[in-house]
Amino acid sequence: MNYEERVNGVANSGIKVLMYHKITDDKKLWRSHWTYVSAEQFAKHLALLDSWGFTPITFNDYLLYKKGEINLPKKSVIITFDDGYEGVYNIAFPKLKEFGWNAVLFVLGDRVIKSDFWDKKIGLSESRLLNQEQVIQMYEAGFEIGSHSMRHSNLVSVPLRIARYEIIQSKENLQSLLKSRVRSFCYPYGLTNTTVKNLVEECGYDLACGVYTGPPKFWEDRYDIRRITIKNSTNSFSFGIKMLAPFEYYEWIGSRVKRSVRHTLKKNQPQKEYITAATTDGTYLHA
Ligand SMILES: [Zn+2]
Image (cartoon, rainbow, N blue to C red; front, side, top):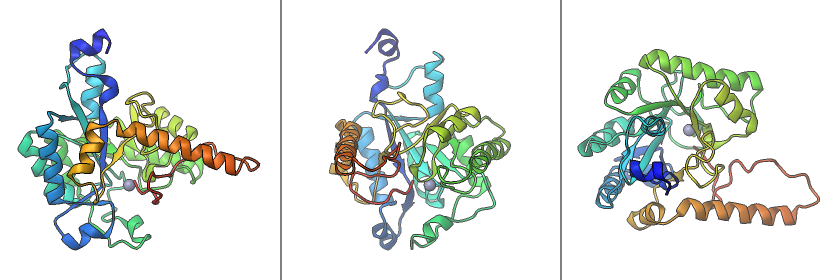
């Protein structure tokens, strides 16, 4: 830990970023897909964070810390929610507020979209998304609001002009809604590459979250921040492994080994520049 880190009481490399999607109190839904986390599980996760001495912060907090304007809690963690599901407002938001904590919410810039049509394509029942008033209320209560593109598009496969529109228009729409600068972006499906990352930077964002593609050390690549996936199977034990062990490093090493094995098996075939959607358990990545 260097001098700057010591006086501010935080180890930069130690900040973990957690990724949640849907929070629900419907037991049937909860078991149906990994993107659901039950209200009970979520409450347990927060209680565990509290008992271990962690304090959730936002990326905006971290940016202020980098500018020397604030100090951070010694054991900081960043909680993110993708897509902006209604359950985040109804269940997670009041639960976090019981502890006086904030989180980061990535929502779509196209505020006309009312449900997760992209989940329907993979056989999931549609869930309602947050309305404008709910997003504003969470922002005013201290949540950071970031962009998750306009229409949850796969930015690595659409034409460049569409990707640019998705990135910049969502920023402008959300800034207009919140009357404040939007600094963070989150790649739909966790899919990104050098071109998309450069676009996000050019469009004026300060950072972007991926899932499995970035380096394990926090902030080493601020346009591809690696996150730890919290699933419906993340019980207290596995939550402990994810929070208390260097879990992001295990995942990173695992993905390097897999890539090396694949490279060996297919060494005569052209390799893709990026592994964009490989998960550690072999499931298809939705982010
Ligand atoms: Zn998403």
